[in-house]
Amino acid sequence: MRNGSRDEQQRSATIGGRIRELRKSVGMTQEQLADRLQLENKSSVSKYELDKTTPTPEQFVCMAKIFGTSTDYILSGQIPERGTKLLQAEKILQSMTLDKTLDAAITILLALQTLE
Image 1 (cartoon, rainbow, N blue to C red):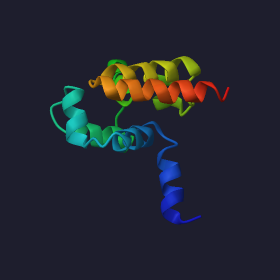
Image 2 (cartoon, one colour):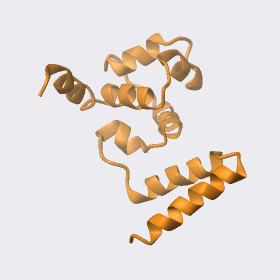
Image 3 (tube, rainbow, N blue to C red):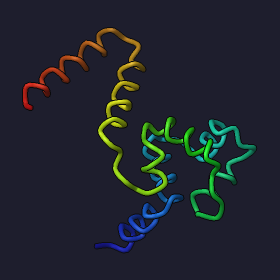
């Protein structure tokens, strides 16, 4: 295993590492996350990601919504439970603005259902 990948695993083993991983996974900058959390500047997000300070409970809830995950995952690294995954899927479906995109998503879901 390369050092870079080991370092990434160690970082995602912390709250700050998971925040960084989630932020990057949605293509968001520190500044954009700071704006969404109504923080004055991106340095607060940087401090969260470096585990120098801890977000408030309200900020954890907001981040979970932004990233489509659970506060449990951000805090402990535990994979979201089935209910959380269903909420995430519902959020994605509700965000689709084109009928043809929603129709395609439903077609894919119905095909997957036949595999059960």
